[in-house]
Image (cartoon, rainbow, N blue to C red; front, side, top):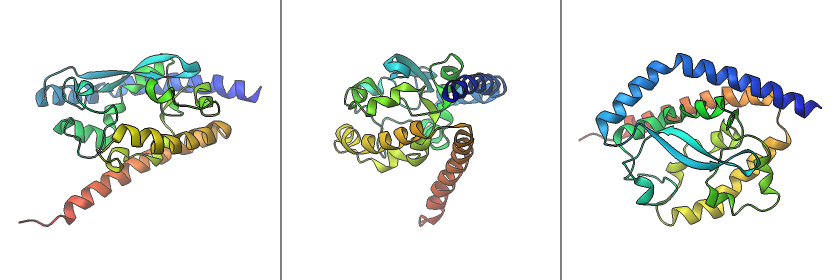
Length: 217
């Protein structure tokens, strides 16, 4: 009963949060759209199939951060210094602004504000029976995994990146996602949302501090 109530109330909060987010952030969407179009050819948005609640596939929407047809020319996972990422795309990824269109996925019920990060079908096919429990809840824009791996692409080497992700990073992500499912609740969701904001801030400060520390000619 408690879990059912939690799921229902969480869905209402998701709709309210995503609705207000899309309503008030439309100026940001316009600015980002203009930057993307001025920087490289291609669509403003990028859609990619992910696996969500109950194992159903859906198209996750993000701002495009890579060159056109990048998914046809390279690994499925973005790695450090990936040449496919555009100049504007690097800024969007650094600030996580590229994920704002996920709010649409939340509004229509494919995602939640907080939950496990949705994976590609080819990665889900590697899940064992216990790991498939992550498909019992709606995937989220943020969660323990997203915070822990907020600088994921900087951690991944371009050498055998897809295999390294599947055999190492994904296994650790699933461990944290399963812990979230076993211990989820309203208070934890609020803490995760607040922590995400701080994590993005620390990531930005870390990146800028590295720039300041670089020697100049």
